[in-house]
Figure 1 (tube, one colour):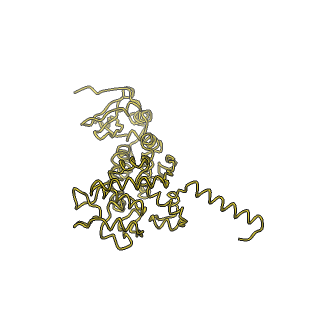
Figure 2: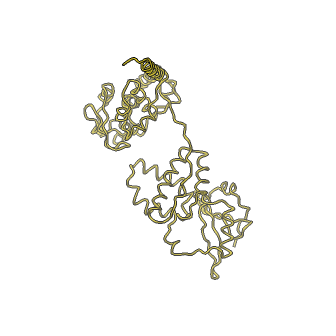
Figure 3: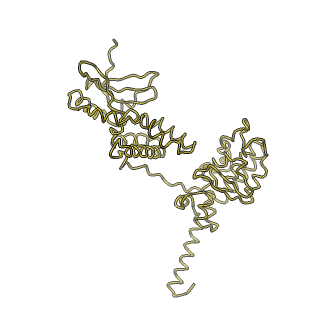
Length: 385
């Protein structure tokens, strides 16, 4: 029998362990019986070798994300000294591992409620983050310290993704509370990363340059013209990218788009004459899609891949496609459109979200300040409106 590999385990050293094609365990040189099991998918969990009634057993302590190595050593010593009773066994059997709970009760109760695109994102988040971190840990053994350790690690590379994953973990554990598997949510008190609101919108000169760049692309061929027209519709309607990429002819009804599967549910988009002109010049094929894939006409165009080149040509390299939606909202507000109406135009479920989208340029803010100042001066002078 090959000798077990023993090293002095540290939190940093465990993080550096590279997965292999097979599962392997690295044992601690300081506390006999304590090891770290590394799976091919990158999952790492503490294990303890225990002898019970003459039989040697390997017992899982939980994910390395749920406890540090010093805590694991202490737990191992307590277990091997008999100070920790693994009973009540009935309770242990009733409290599932995080991975089993997610795959069972939570999946059945929640996953079908999500839109297909949302389900895809949730599955990716579970596979890459939550299951490797907490999958082998019982729900009632997940601690706030463990959650904070995982969250801090993920936040170093993707603060926005860490916020989203924390929201999902919180939802799952809240459902665990509702099912009676734990009493408090260990994510409570974990503070999300602060995100600087993006206030990028296009100036009049930038819109003109983008228009010229789109015209230039349109002259290069039908495929490029289709991509340019998709971008034009984003500018003219304030729609989300997915709503235009996946637009069906059956959803185009005269002066409106009757979107049946938008982010906030079915909604109507009222078309201005410029947007209608873009739609009217699209070739009507045999398939259902307004913008079909050039390779597979039975499928929608998968993306607007020319955008990076177009924005460079227009000298707006920091502008995202989604910023065109912000831009639509901002210019609507600058034209005097009330926020509740802008909210309807964007298909928002509340005006609170709309306020995040509306950005006014300095000229509009200055003019508003002057109007308020003039009104206050008249009031203070006793003048009537």
